[in-house]
Every structure is written in C-alpha cells, then in structure tokens.
Length: 226
Ligand SMILES: Nc1ncnc2c1ncn2[C@@H]1O[C@H](COP(=O)(O)OP(=O)(O)OP(=O)(O)O)[C@@H](O)[C@H]1O
Image (cartoon, rainbow, N blue to C red; front, side, top):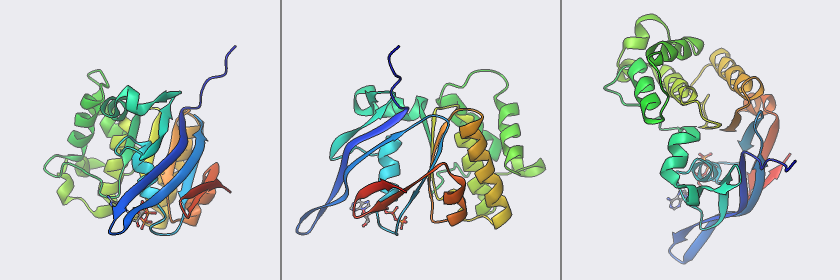
C-alpha cells in the first residue's frame, strides 16, 4: 500500500515583498507537513509572517518560490480558486462578512458557493451558530448589528459550514472573552480530533497554542516545530 500524502504540505516556501532597496523575504524556505485530524498553532512576534503563511496555505496568495501541496498536488496546478472553494476555509482578521446579510444568510450563501448541497442548509447554519453561541433573534440580525465578538463567531460558523478538509484561522479568538474563546478552541479541537479536519490557527494566545497538538514558531522567516 502506498502512503497517503499529507493533507497539506509546504515545500521550500518563500515569499518576498518589494522594498525600496530590492526585496525582503518574509518567509524563507519554509517546509512543513500538516496532517488530517490535528490542530496546529502558528505563533511568532508581530510582523514575523504568520498572516503571510496563512494566506499562502489558504490559496489567497502565491509564493515567490516553493509550493503549497494539497493531498500531494500543487494548489497552483489545481487552481487557487478551486482550492479555495472546495478544500479550504479561512477565517481572517477582517472577517469579510456580508454586513447587509443576516448571520444565517452569510453562512448559507457560503455553503452555496462551496457546493454544500441539500435543503437543510438553513438548518445546518442555525445549528452551527447555536454551537458558537449565536442564538434566537441574533441569528436573523444583519451582521452589521452584531458585536465584534459575535461577528467573529459568525465568520467561524461560516468556515465550519463549508465542509472542507483544511480550516485556517487568523487570531480567531482575538475579540472574545476568555470563556467564549475557550469554547471556540474546544470546537476547533473537536473538528480536528472527531471529524479528522486539519486546523491551522495563527494566534498570540498562549491558551490557544497550548490547546493545539503542535506549536509552530515563525522567526526570521523560518518555521520550526516546538
Ligand atoms: N502585501 C505586502 N507588501 C509588502 N509587505 C508586506 C505585505 N504583506 C505583508 N508584508 C510585510 O510582511 C511582514 C509580515 O507580515 P504579516 O502580516 O504576515 O505578519 P504577522 O506575523 O501576521 O503579524 P501580526 O502578528 O502583527 O498580525 C510585515 O513586515 C509586513 O509589513
């Protein structure tokens, strides 16, 4: 039997940006394999390249050199749009909610885009919102009218609704109180351990890092497991 490739693999990943005097490499030859059923925390100082790494892993940006492989296949070959729509869900700091839509509508429209079928979309959206503590009339409120922490949880519910193999989240507990944050971390852990997803979380929180299966630190453009 041939071994399955890891769900996500970063190989020789380098990302540099133009500067006044040339280019500056934010990520330098980053290599790592991410397995299904595990939760990873990416930590590092502000400006160390965590969001850059997550953007590459979620197909929102292309590396200067090297590759992001999904189940062994270079996502550039697979097509970034297809990779984003079918295989990865991302919760970014900017959330990108459609503020004129309700919480439920934000989720059902994302399900439509990612091809989640069935008439149960609305019910599934409600279940996920409830799981994250968005209940009753808040589910039908335009997201503009929800608090920052509630919006963050709607964005997480939307990512969970997409039924993809890889979930990337940038500071997902940033605007949440301790108890709500712990609840979200618990959801992420269950997603990895019970549903076999690969969960990658960028965080400054020690609690989130300690709850993960593996902590990866970015420093001087290099990624090392701790
Ligand atoms: N599009 C861009 N053009 C030029 N430089 C960029 C661009 N995006 C990011 N950078 C630079 O790359 C470096 C890493 O940024 P990044 O946002 O990945 O860091 P981070 O570790 O996520 O930081 P934080 O913890 O503060 O969110 C920073 O110096 C930033 O200014």
